[in-house]
Amino acid sequence: MSSESERLTIRIIKIGCLFVSVVIIETSVFPDIANLVRIDLFLGLILGMVITIPFGTASILVIVLSFLLQAFSGASMGSLPFIYLITFLGLTAAKNVVYLENIVSQIFLGGLSYILGIVLARLFTPIYVSPPFIASVLASSLLTGIATPLVVYMVRILWRQDEA
Amino acid sequence: MGSNRSDKIFFIIISVLVVIFLISIGPNRVFNGTLSTTREVYYWMERVASSPLNLTRKIWNNYIYLVDTRQENENLKQELAELRIQCRHVKEIEEENKRLRSMLEFKKASYTFKLYPASVLGQDISMIFKTLVLNRGTSDGFFKDMPIVNMNGVVGRVISVSPHTSEVLLITDPNSAIPALIKTIKTKGIVRGRGDGLLNLEYIRSSEKVNAGDEVVTSGLLDIFPRGLRLGYVLTVKKDRREMFAKIILKPAVSMQRIEDVFGIGKADNKNN
Image: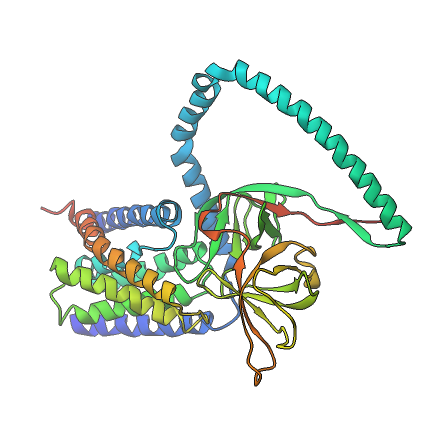
């Protein structure tokens, strides 16, 4: 029992390290490369948790990590956790309908979740939807979709490393 | 049994979701202290991660790169001499300016501001919101609502501060609103971020003569931004006879895509002459 909880702690620490990498890449690396697009790697992390991690543990991780993400955004307090928790629940529901292990469905869901996140964010902030803005949202959602399977793969590797 | 447990977890998550939603529609940044701690941890991790790179850079800059220093030194001496002459000239102009002001009995408070340099540590993770994290905090003299500028104009203001980091709300963020003034016609309005990289200038009457290219500066109201800092330039003006106010879009003076070094403006020392 104790070794089981120890294993769970180590796994959560590993996911925490992946989260820190995601934050550094999103706040420092991506803006230096291209400022007009924003790739959301956290969506890949959520999808990876939906696929790999038990529902109870994953939901707590999503709530805690998305609250920490709030420190790196100008979004009003609670709006990011709200958006990511909705996404998490949506992807959990999709688990019964879509085969999430498939890379194509991961790309599709990553891109779609990004666009839905932007739509939800508009609930909290009045933003002007201009053609250049739509173009950069579409480009960002495409790139987020492409990056999603990679993050999902990393979550799976980190969570299941000590198995077998 | 398992399904019952899953139902309970689902019920808890829905409850959390409702609570988060209620927090998010309330006043912003309820848990500022917690968030500052997160950024503080991030600051130290970034410092540790970048220390090998900084050491390499130091060795390169201080030893290997100094091969052509002698020639560079000569050039700099010459440049310094030229600048000294220019500086003397500027001082003369300044003296003349002072004389003219006193002749016109133009009585005005003169403000001196202390500038605090800072570098950008990271940018906002989301696409909609526009914030920066700076590598300076309360221990370096930064404070909440401190105006942040660079050489071209206003960047934003500090909204949250920890001992070594500050979060800056850019003027292009939809939550940003700054009292402004059109420099040519001296008409006051509010500059608000649009979220798409441009700004709106609001509450300018349709009857005002505003042209594309007009400079817009801070008006100094609310005492957050000092008067006269450049905000942007008028890009388009749309007037409708049925509308009381014109729809004016501004291009920010500062290119928000690539901000590296900025300055925080300290509290003004008011010296009445």
